[in-house]
Image: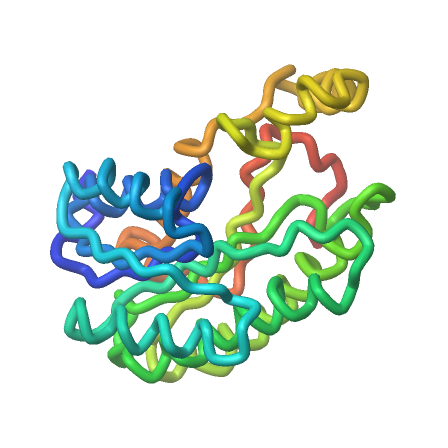
Length: 248
């Protein structure tokens, strides 16, 4: 299936490793041109070097929690790419209970990023925004209540933004992963530091395993493509069936 992403200009934040890096890789494999960012320059440089083997990659360190961080990165990326077609907001402070810090990054940073990007995007249904959410938005997470609350807010922001920009032909969606394991990630650490929690999460999933980053990336790339041209305002779970409640 040709997704029609060849030559598209794409931003992916938090793309030095894990889900973000897999998303950038997915777009590159479809022929898109990609600009990525992350906070840690060393990890970003290493990730960008690997990704550059697949296509055109521009990388710059940026902090979505900084007041001008998101807009500054967008301006730079749009200059490097000659405009923007797709923005993937993959950002989280991963705060357990600090609501102020969580809001500043997860909601404030994501909104600032997407608002700045919309100014560079054409009025076209090939142009779209994808927020990376979490199944945590739809369930109780007593050990990370601030994170869960901000991801719920992200879904609300996306729904409102989708209605706002629909007349421009721009689509806005959320892809909400379940629990994902990758080297250096939180569940990779939990496997060693909190094996009881890790095993409980494994047993909770109908597939009895955690997701791989590329399984999330494949859905993001499809949703950002012309093949999903009538999908907007949606919150799409990629969680192996772990969220058992109905979406009504």
